Every structure is written in structure tokens, then in C-alpha cells.
Length: 119
Length: 118
Image 1 (cartoon, rainbow over the protein chains, first blue to last red):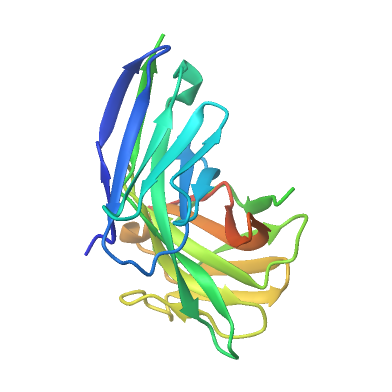
Image 2 (cartoon, each protein chain N blue to C red):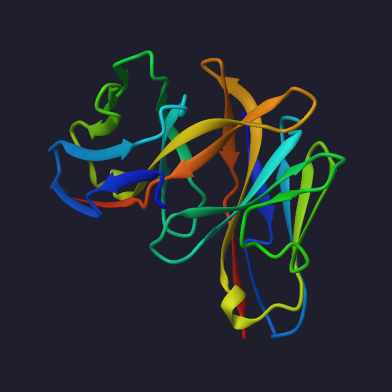
């Protein structure tokens, strides 16, 4: 069962346009929502993240919008550039117990969105 | 800061041999590291969580005797694929639990290792 649903699977945007990727979840125990950017043959890199007590977070051209009641969150890339062409993954983190009273965040990833920005 | 390296970046081996992949946190100590597997154009699937000095916790369906994980120090975890077969060919990515970002513990990912089993 896919814990985090991501759409669209692929996205083509013209240079300067806005790229929007959406994700949805069901488990209200998720407490941290990061977005990762991955280039071919490379590992994912943390792009931006948000906690559920915040409705929006902006870092440069990247903005996360978070709707807690709808259990949805989205990534907006303003002024999209060819260098933004990559695969983007949304994720959700849930605390899991690891013994001796400690917990850590376990990530569940969406299926990914392949973004292509045309020059 | 918070850099994670993997070695090798790619490896080709014959069916039946074993392959070891190293994951290192370069500028921080990581008590917990994670191993993921990614098939082409697919998402990351968590294989196991390794904690320094203790046995790894494997996800359901992952054979612990096939994918041996050792987290011997606070900066090194290794994944050994034993008796590799072509179906084990994949992109293996590790991550390390690193310095918190905004009060939340954050995973920092390595660059991945492409394993091809002939």
C-alpha cells in the first residue's frame, strides 16, 4: 500500500513557468514532509521540508504548500529552469520506536515526478 | 556539511559472488543509517535500518541472510549482497541520520551504488 501518493508521474514545463507537484497521505501520524531532488545516477538531495503546523514554506524559487485538513502537500517551483530538470520525490516521516525509549523518523516516499523544463 | 559518501559508485560482478558496498558519513557521526533500493524510474524502497553496535532491522520481505548489514562505527555502515544474482541488479542508496534541520532529525543520502550482476 502506497503510503504517500504523488502526481503527476511526469511533467513538462517551459522555462520560466511554474512546476507544481502534488502529494497526498492518509496517516495523520506523519510529522515531517521533505521533498527530494534526484538527478540520474545520483542519490536524492534534500530540497525543502515542512512540518504539519506550518501551511507554507518558501526557500528561493521553491515553495511547499501544506493542507493539513486535506492531508495534501505540494511543491511549487517558480521560474522553472532547465537545470531543474530532475526527478522529484515527496516523502513523509513517521516516528518509530527503536528501543530504550528513543525514536527516529522513518521516511515513506512517493513514486516520483520526472520534471523536464524546456529552454 | 552533512555529506554522505558511498563506495563503489558502480560495480559489475558475476552471478554467485558477493559484493560489499560502503556508506560513510564524512563530517558527522551517524548512529543510524538506512539502506534503500531503487529500480529504474521507481521510488526508493527501504531495505533496512542499521544502528551502530547492534543488529540491523530489516523491512518485511528483505532477506537478512542475503543482504548483510554491518554498522561497525559511527561513520561507517556496509551492505554485503551475498551470492548475488541478476535480479539483485539495482541502485543501492544509503542515508545517514544527521544533524537536525529545523528541529527534526534529517536523513542525508549518499550518491548511490549501481550494482549489475551478470
